[in-house]
Length: 477
Ligand code: ZN
Image (cartoon, rainbow, N blue to C red):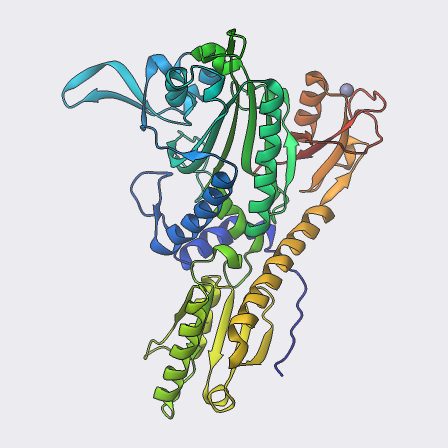
């Protein structure tokens, strides 16, 4: 049997994270950053397949929960955008404007959607008449545009963003609350498949989505010790419904405003996967969404070349028949070492090496990308073995990242203890004043309190009030 290699879980050195991140995403062919507009990158075929696989998982969960897919226009008239005051305040400076068509100045300037509330809600007013039209649950996957002024970064801080957004309308506040819970369940399922353990934090008043009653931010921890928001789930109550006059007639003939929620995610999911699971060899992709789940590498040195290739093609057919995404690296002029390297850079979960030894014994050598473990198996049960290893890899990737997250949450009772790049759990009385003092003194953000119950005993880090809630304090990516 093959050797069993157990390596410690080593994260990429935080000091060189940025450089490492930029290198591995280019080396793996996910994106091309040479497009001549800052913050707007090209999805290369490999990267787009990865994103599409994530999107189709999301679509599956959405359809299971009775959401319907739509596509709204990209451009929004200025007067529609202006209707919800907090929303404009929050997004105003990030908006791209279209002010001219051909040679003509437009009477009403149009903006490129930074998110689609203001595109959709004037139409919801036309779609919703009575309680029979509710709940309304829709989603779309489109590009949104935000004029990011900080240093841009592929997938995580872009000006053109691949975006998922679900919008729902309900009769009552309770139903809208149930929707938030459903969204968080969908998030949990997706996060398992993407191997992205996370914290679901109810944001502070001053950090919630513009126009929302409250926001739950979903944050994953990068090797830098900073939290990256990978999703946002928002309770709007009737805030937007009042601004856009979205009303329904209830069973007693009374006219009422609908209660609304949204759920947003983006290409940041890809950035989080790269950052959290990558290593010194490149990216490591979770099996379920990897564009290539298995790569077969024939190791031929002249003799038996055709037999080995024939054997590899047979293996490929077996795997394809079981709906496993597989390819063969049969390039003639490339040495096996370079092929291994290429497979590692692209983060392909499993590699199957086949040389004359394997051909003779009718076996395969299976190599796992995350641990580097190598094992030899009979070729008869190749499908079963591949599925087993994929499953084991997904579990292991999630578990390791979860352990990293848990190990980096530190309880503190004094601001002077806050010195490292970690997630600090602190006591917070909930007042804006204390929150802002803590944020300023520690140069970190309060990312919120856990959504749901959390056992905690502590005092407010600033005012010393007793028996307060726990809040999470960290730098944001
Ligand atoms: Zn306080």
